[in-house]
Image 1: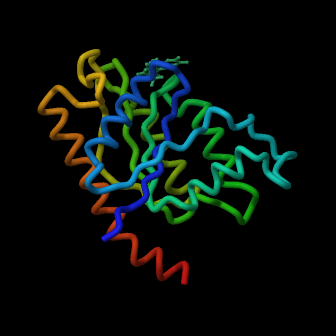
Image 2: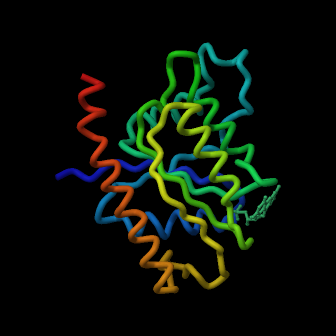
Length: 191
Ligand SMILES: Cc1cc2nc3c(=O)[nH]c(=O)nc-3n(C[C@H](O)[C@H](O)[C@H](O)COP(=O)(O)O)c2cc1C
């Protein structure tokens, strides 16, 4: 059976982003379940409703990538106890113009890393609300707050801590099963 196409969205544009490292590790752990593609968001302009008709070229590309994905994985830092502006900007663009929401009915999973003890929990709560009731995605339940340690993921994107590795593998497998369960419903709705 063909693997689900997974769009991976990292809510950081930092060169040494720990969330990008986490996303790369998740992609490796899920390679048997997903065909993953990282969707770029750091080249999208700042959202402006005046520029929706037509949307700028990078936004059109991003919307097309979302629409071609069977499921979307959001790996994000927390900024000031909420969703980073970079990520919220991307979410708003792809939900527009009115009636052309690219996110609708797609399965989504949310995870994030921070050095802090409560590690992105508040940002994730905000993001779940936006993705679910805000733009109509099906958001997987559960919690995945990763307190990042410098040696947790090696240069080959392998998770070195066995308990963290097991947790993350179970998380990607759960998401693959969740996206798989939704696939027939989504196909019926699209027919
Ligand atoms: C503007 C800003 C706000 C931040 N606010 C939070 C926060 O609310 N909670 C938190 O755990 N870390 C916060 N941090 C620290 C980030 O967790 C840290 O910079 C982390 O490395 C960001 O992830 P990244 O490496 O993937 O960009 C903040 C960092 C920045 C730059």
